[in-house]
Length: 147
Image 1: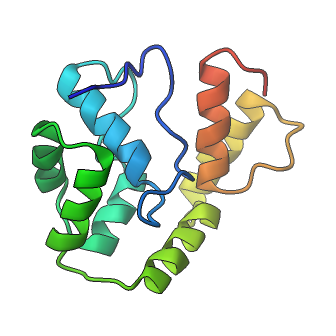
Image 2 (image 1 turned 120 degrees about the vertical axis):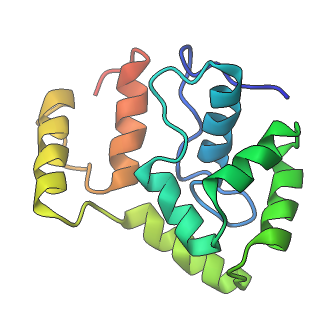
């Protein structure tokens, strides 16, 4: 199993898709790094990952066990499509992924946290609206980029 070292670079953007699913490639990077002990501050089975698990009906433990076998992204995708209790059409997967690409924090405490994070990164940024915007910006800044 080739695991990324997430202390040296971020996982893939949550926007990257595998089989139409957002979140999945990033989650696979975090899972592999977690198994290898190179996840740094990145957490497998985060709130964002939970969206994927809720949509597919898979459990974090089952996916991690599949990743532990050394399966490549393609093999994991085939397994997801076969094992997911909640079966979806490609249209449903696309609609869900489009939604995740734009979703933002929906409770007051998380909105306040989000606003504080944007102020920390760069208060002049008016283009950061959703979860994926924040994750991409935070990843970039965490590894030396300027917000």
